[in-house]
Length: 176
Figure: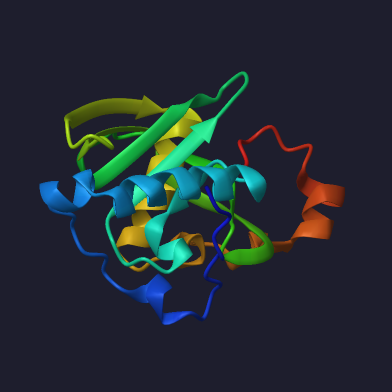
C-alpha cells in the first residue's frame, strides 16, 4: 500500500464531474489497490472520508471510516447516488483534506439513503444518520466537483484551524 498525494483546492480535478466505474474496472487490480491506498492515505492524514478526485482520480469512488462513539464502519461507495434525503437539516462543522487549515458550518439533511456498489461490485443500500450521513454527502460532493465551501450559506463561520481549535472546538456539533 502507498500514501497518495492529496489534490488541494485549485487543482482542476476537484471541480470535475467524476466518471462512473464499470464492473470490469471495479474488479481490476488497479482499482482494488487504489481502494487500499485511499484507506491508508485517509487514516494517515488523518481523516474520516476520502473521494477519488482528492487523489487526482476523477472516478466515482469514496472510502470512509470513523472509529469510536458516534462513528461508523469502514465503507466503500462506488457509483453512489442518494435515493432519499430526510426532511430535517443539521448544521455541522466541516473541514476537508483538500482545503487545508479551514473549518466552516454546513447545513445538510440529517438522514439519507444511499445506493452504491461495494468494492466487489455488489449493490449496497445504506440508510445513514448523524456523522455518517454528513460524511457521505461531503464525500459525494467531491464526485460532482464541489467542496464544502460551496455548501456554506454563512461564510462568517469560515475559520482558520488554529482559531477553530481555540474558540470553537468546544462546540458539540460534529466535526468532519
